[in-house]
Image (cartoon, rainbow, N blue to C red; front, side):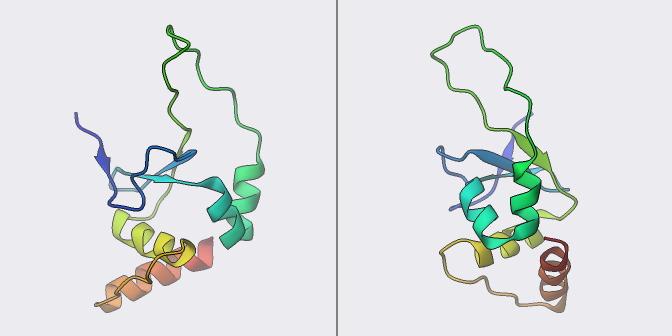
Length: 107
């Protein structure tokens, strides 16, 4: 099965965290940006994580940890665009506005 990855800027190879939306889209993000944008993310990311599993080939890159979230990819994309130094998202429908507001209240 192919992994669905979010669009830029949430698809970068240098991410140190992956957020998985409720509809199984992977957002490759930077912890520092999320922690700076939100005290909830900062607290969530300060919890010690188990070490990544050892790979047979020590030279192979390890994947960043994955955090499962309850938000849809659409709501998560909108929320992250408010956190990242990019243009704010267009929110053309009331559903988009409510989705990002719910996520913003949570995080």
